Length: 575
Image (cartoon, rainbow, N blue to C red; front, side, top):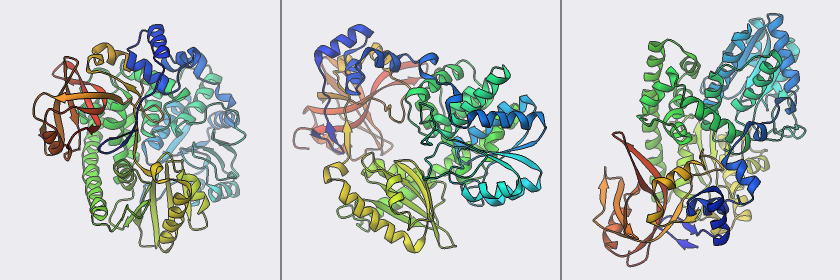
């Protein structure tokens, strides 16, 4: 272990003989081979699966998913009998792309289909009995949820009363028992035989539609692969197994086939690269679509993604861009507000293990993003609440890998009105009066489960590298590890004993740039949003230091240069 300025570093380990063997077998740079070993990817079969995804090996037949066949048979009957079908989605990118995917694939088959996406503030999350009643009044015979519904017990009961068939497709974990629906498709069901469990909602929808098109003897519309790509990346599901295959497939597709909506998202995000990565989509493109559901009406998102009129798509694209900039400003304001609370010890992280804050002025659609930022800044589980006039606090939780937030909420379910989600991300509703009791229960659970060291922010370094290793060959090899995302994070490399060759530069009062030297090689090193490091680099002068950095390609004016993106630094001297 090595203490950096922000993180406790876990230094890379590895057998040099094994590293050399893998590097030779796959023609890889040594640090890339060591990265694979550090991640437990050592055996040939495992390495082949990871480095070279294949449809035959990684993709399982959709009929293995519980209730998928029953669902497809019901959809076919609805199409043949010209019954009205309602797709009920969600207001995030996963819900928007899932709804778009259903529309894209069902309309060409002659389905009488429409969709509804709830407004985050007016309608709340998930299907409700009100929606079921309205669907019955409008003569719908089949409702299909996408990216929600696994806890829709009352809506399922109401649908049955009214003679509507409700099909639930979801990817969230069930709460012990299931709604009494016509069919429930969710790979997390304990008796679901599908081998891969970690799809986004759009992935579950995709499997159903793949089976439908297979039974019809047709090829899926090409747009389906783009929508699957966007929703999977945006929902931050693990980029492992089948997800990894489909994201790679989708990236290959969109980099050869640029749709109007994708072109607008790239322009809005100032993305000029010829080849898009999962990181470009996750950070530069899908947040624009998410901004609709966070601040406005998400139904425009379907219109944008499926639109063919360039002027209409561009107009919605302008709204997306403006809303996303507004969202960023709101997010920065809330972060600053909570950081001030922490600095003034009103939230005292020397005594408290969880960051919990609430306000009636924070938009409910933004607090999840702020919670993620705070976890990254402080390494503590975080819950932020939007307080309503009805005495209910609506919260977004983000956690650290060491603390399972879903299980913690389950243990406190007597205090909570509703909750759902995953191990490190969840949402909940709770009476405002119960918020202090929940905080106390979570603090006690963290104290019982975690040691102080487990609560310290840690950084796992994947491999040791020298500046001489950082070449175009290195970045070519690094691309084999993509796509990067959840459970396949971008590697961080340990570069010991480098020195500065000129004074550091503080850019926009936020970012620190310096030129580092070792092994007769000079490379640029940039730390984004770490202004406090500027003075420390000045004091360090020409003393050697260690860096933890990612390696990135900078695309500018048609030229590509390789540079280091600093994650942390460990000074050795008087700094």
